[in-house]
Length: 461
Image 1 (cartoon, rainbow, N blue to C red):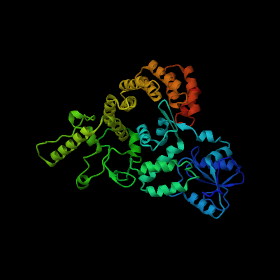
Image 2: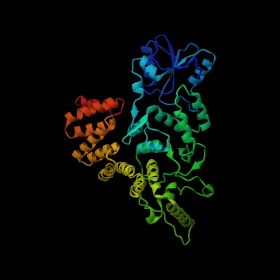
Image 3: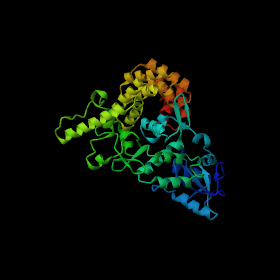
């Protein structure tokens, strides 16, 4: 962007100004922003022209169209600025301050894994997988509790969606370079795109196949008939990144034959006693000959055996992450159990096993897994929180309260722990003790979907 038209970070006077908006706003909807502009004496215009004073650029995701190009408003603003006229760029921070909505503090609020998962409507396992792949980078990590910036998270989601719609990495790379100084000031968007373009992760194509962003097809990890991970996962799964790197590329054999029976899941579960099929089913084949199906089964079993022999103990954790993200909770649980036994990130393996058991509503076993995690790391905040949730569901209220108190003591800014503790205390009849934690939750997460419940509880509802 031309230096003559810098982004305004300080609150301007909007009275009498014509203001256009582009991109998704983080802190309010478009109609709310238009109403706020009008209340401040400004006039909203749909498309910037030579008389437009400001172009408000939202922080809720890169301002790109469905084709991956800059939005029409941004392209028009660039054309006008090249002529020495047209709008200056107004940051969302400056806009919020100008209309009396605070500003930087509201925009710089950080979000935990659980909060990010709710914001994006994706499984928690996917957020963790994206973090391990480098697509998301926590702003800070305290006692294993990761906090993320909203703009980074929504930017990653937007790039994923555009790639899945068929927009090429080259187009997105050029658009993000054009956004430098407008939206992607720190280059985070470009860094995320490079992670995607490396092919470490794959996108789900409209026909259901997986491909890396360069177009190379991959075998699907989640096998037909895999256990249902729930409606939310099923709804999001067709639109979001799948875990890559574990699924083999399609080879000549797969290209000429029916590959529908051969998934990455087949290649890592192992053969028979070597790696039990946690869904309770197993591929079988007659090694002595027989039908084509028998021969295929034998070939799959042989491939699986070779993969099992080649695998090292430290691969089990990554396999668990991939299986959990694909929705195969039982396979993930099996992999995490093996990882913990092998000493591969045992605290995280136990924690993730607990998460799988929670999804399966096996509360007592989940509590045991979380107890193993905190026994290995006494400051594992999320494990303490989840232990409290599991114990509460199992009817062990005193233990649940104790675990949740430990979580909020370790991380006073952990909104979910305050919510869970307040809810548990309220349910046990200790409403006086719950009040402080409802208030803490509202202070930390005022825009949470659960905020209305907290306000109702505080009002005696």
